[in-house]
Amino acid sequence: MSFEHDHSHDAFPDEALPEGSVVDGAELARDIDEAFDFVVVGTGAAGAVAAHTLARAGFSVAMLEEGPWVKTREFGDRVYEAFRRMYRDVGTQVLEGHSYIPLIQGRCVGGSTVMNSAIAHRTPEDVLGQWDADFGLGAHVSASTLEPHFDALERELNAHAVADDVLGENNRIFLDEAAKDGLPARKMHRYERNCRGSGRCVTGCPNGAKQGMNVSYVPWALSLGARLFASCRVERVTIEHGKATGVLAHATGDGARSKGRTVRLRARRGVLVAASTIQTPNVLRRSGLRSRALGEHFSCHPGYGVGGVFDNPVTMSFGATQGAESTHLRKSDRIKLETIGMPPELAAVRIPGIGGELMRRMGTFANVAVWAVVVRSEAEGTVRQGWGGRDRVKLSLTTRDVERTRNGTAILARMMFEAGAREVWPGIFGLPAVLTSIDQVRLIEEAPADSRLFSFITTHLFGAARMGPTPEGSVVGPDFQAHEARGLYVVDSSVFPTNLGVNPQHSIMGMSRLAATRIAEAARRTAAA
Ligand SMILES: Cc1cc2nc3c(=O)[nH]c(=O)nc-3n(C[C@H](O)[C@H](O)[C@H](O)COP(=O)(O)OP(=O)(O)OC[C@H]3O[C@@H](n4cnc5c(N)ncnc54)[C@H](O)[C@@H]3O)c2cc1C
Ligand code: SF4
Image: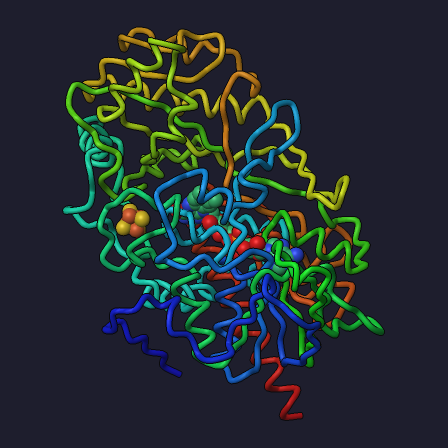
């Protein structure tokens, strides 16, 4: 079946939606009880793709999303405002462990794809090989089974290398220096149509260029007849006689009319949970699943940024937010090096100094570049439901994880000096806040490998409802169905047996599309029987 999108009209795709296709939980004046073939929990990378795939296959589909739908025309450039409206817990979630690591997620229609940088990477074949060798998944999930899904996603979301005219200096300096050093690097491949290089991905793309789920698969699914229940938080999946029968949700938002309103959606054929690695395990737990593997084997990619001050303007406010990368050290050192354009409000927390010194450095902001090391960490942690129903995530990085971060930081600092930086800000507690010569990079290399000394952040999340062939040690089978309940599918990266070493959204969408395609085929077979 072919599916053509019309991009010729002027309205953004999140406008002019089919009449009655969106129910806003924040404005709900009555309780809801409706039935669909499939109910999908979450509208991020995984949920939106699954919902669209099922709608395109001709099934009636409902999507539920805890957060609001913030439209393209509402996106501003104020970071706090974006965090307040679109980020989970206003961006204050943390990984608890040997150190506290901020964990950032979206909570809005489109999930974390609304504020992400649109970077698209296929799942590395060696990672899929590991999933086969260690978890016996090769017959079900492999490069060849995923390939048609990646092809379709790349076509539909227009994945391509960053264009030269929106590359920007932050990305260009990285690529030029990598070329001089003989470090293989490339322009990132991103899902976008006519990116204007406004460097504002983190507050939502004001141009509708980034192909987040809010302007792609969610509205496309609605145009195929799906319904969206926004600002509706799923409390649990209802399971009767070992089979998922629907979900129970309640309206979120402050509206007096909607307070206490419940949304019951019945699912004739199945419930797909795609609430993300952090929320999915707790949705499953609240639904009565008791697998010992539930909430275990959580993993992530901690990221660590390095700042450099150049003589000439870098102007991070122009250029693809993230536009250059090197995966050369992914296999050997488990690190990926990349650029990341930062708005001043976010970068400010890492700008050295106080008082006059801080003000002086803020004055150099136009000349600052920020690059980052992303680590395929070995550490595994847990996801539990804590006090007040909050998601509680624990993980302590291993010494090797920190050593790898430190090595990547040293490589980036050296590259910055070689590219002409007059100052490098390593951000490692106990080291000088400002390095002024390449000789000082050895201080980074000699820093203690203690995660408490580094300012990590993480946005790439995996595991905690792992896939595997048997109920011992896994939560879902290779058909994405929970071992404990028929018709209950998990289609986000909580099923990934390991982390990846590359940016995850493309893998998440590819896996979700694969899952939904198979679920649709199975449902058709059942209907025909
Ligand atoms: C700032 C940032 C930048 C990033 N950059 C990139 C990048 O460039 N490339 C890349 O590959 N990855 C990137 N990522 C990561 C990527 O966006 C995520 O891996 C991906 O979006 C995860 O997909 P998901 O569907 O599992 O979860 P999400 O996209 O987070 O969506 C889950 C949705 O489910 C909703 N939900 C949760 N619980 C419930 C419930 N109980 N009821 C109803 N709804 C619920 C949430 O509100 C959320 O909207 C970035 C992430 C962030 C935060
Ligand atoms: S850099 Fe700007 S125009 Fe390009 S995708 Fe990000 S927010 Fe949109």
